[in-house]
Length: 231
Image 1 (cartoon, rainbow, N blue to C red):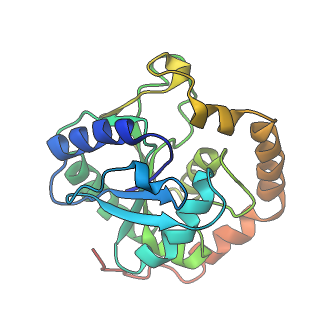
Image 2 (tube, rainbow, N blue to C red):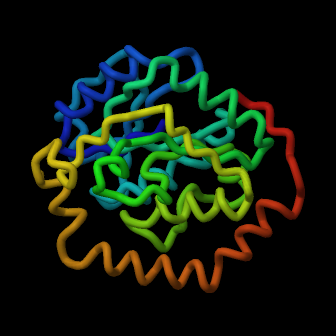
């Protein structure tokens, strides 16, 4: 699971603790840090780390930078925000076994409770696990035109269009977001939400869906099941 993070070493500690308590043998956490900020994080031996040298602060760019590298090594690649905590015991085994039934086009997402709290829509993958074959065929994990927002809408629409989407309602994580009043509106949120960034990504996303999405679907489906057996 990719976890881009900046200015939040204490939050990473909560994520790490919950991950180690509730995860079996099918998942690892990769913490992606900005070069100019990585020294504020303690490097735990039970986590993996990558240092990103590009523009600081944008989750999509970090994910895409490392997606192809790790897609060649792991059968599934996931994303979860650093402001989450895992709740369900052995969640990774549940996810792995179900996605295995979807061939090489499986996409799943976990219940982050925000829909139940009335703070976010259900039809968006705010966390995601996808078959790495999708990443290799698209050459990215989220559309390159996006910077921070609407990747969750993309993943949902991609999985729905492929008829391979799985919503793991009973696999739960606690999303400690300011929208559900479980965290403060910190500097990271401020950078993400200020200066019309959401509106700008919304325009880019709508253009992508109109002009490029169908072509990307064809890239995934044109060669059928690839039988990727990497774990």
